[in-house]
Length: 188
Image 1 (cartoon, rainbow, N blue to C red):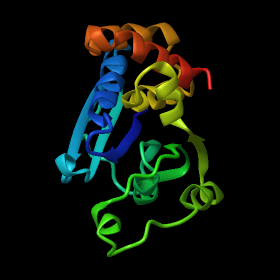
Image 2 (cartoon, helix red, strand yellow; image 1 turned 90 degrees about the horizontal axis):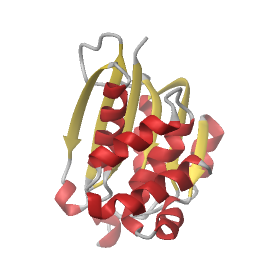
Image 3 (cartoon, rainbow, N blue to C red; image 1 turned 90 degrees about the vertical axis):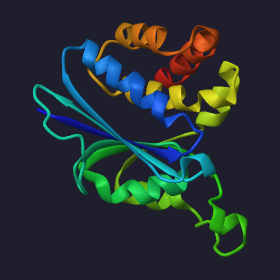
Image 4 (cartoon, rainbow, N blue to C red; image 1 turned 180 degrees about the horizontal axis):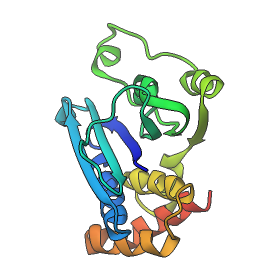
């Protein structure tokens, strides 16, 4: 059986590191893994989407509408944009952080209100204040690993295997912060 996970956020939030941690962890579990990264204007704070598919045999990295088992959303508006990709009975884990896109910054649009409340009425949503947990771990940039920790708890992959992957994937100078961030998410 194939698992389909979408990671969505904006440039600079660490979605690519999160997808590497996820991909490396499931590879270490012996699964066939395909990862596809779609960069919008990521350098300018635009959307970044990563598809991670794993199972006994995976032939395509692309996740179509209604196919994602889990959506890991690093930002509220990105959670809303990704919602059509979640399958019936799927799970969304969303950071409650808001990052204004360029149309909002320049006054051409307004940031939608109550996004997570609306999503929670439609799907199984775990909303997380990942920014506060990352700051508690020692670095606001560890939001990505907090969210991976929250997601990891809902998988059948043992805790120790996630920790081993983080140790081999994260640069040593950021390891302690990221291990704390993972634990804070995992134990939420």
